[in-house]
Image (cartoon, rainbow, N blue to C red; front, side, top):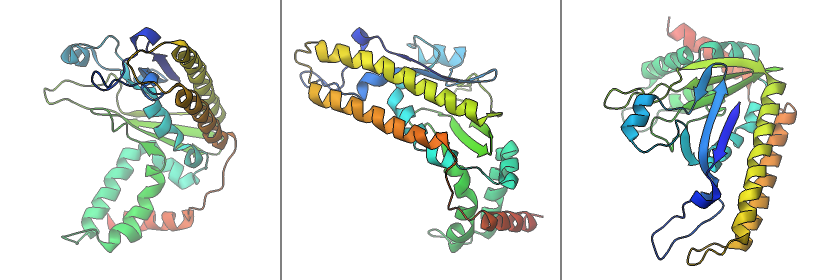
Length: 266
């Protein structure tokens, strides 16, 4: 489900300019990342995009994997909370829901300058549940939006990924879509990714602590401490996926807002 390949240790690139080069735990997570859901591969560039960029050695998202790790784990508490049935059914066509709420906003937002009361009192309340379960890969050009919606023992994963460059080239091989899977399989897949990632980072850190870095600034004590802290943070976040946490969201109020929106748009 979640795949990665860290950059070879001897190919890790310090940041900065000589003579002020430095390396930290963040920069040591450089590597390729890609996700597979069914027959779709997320974060895989098209052949045309690879040719356009010119210097890509692989077809996958090559960045610092910790960026994905932080963005993804930030959603775990919300992902663990089961959506009501009526909202989960909306996630079958989340694009339609987004279109509807935008039309509803355009219909009622009469504030020419600033944000209207409608935004806070109705629009924001109706859309927050979706945004709390979505991250946008904003560090990438045309970064995919990924959403995760749980309902009891099922989870629907939705990706909004289609992006065309200014020259007309499609950026990603995947098309917008979604998949439903068992929640337990999803949680186990995330756990397996974490175990593999930190096992690989164990080796990177071991090599980094043993190496003489010369003029490159590497705080080895801080490097070892941060590695353990990052492990602990992931394990704490992962624990949210082990059970269904209680949501404080007023679901009946959101259902009422959705009904009001549908009536307004008739």
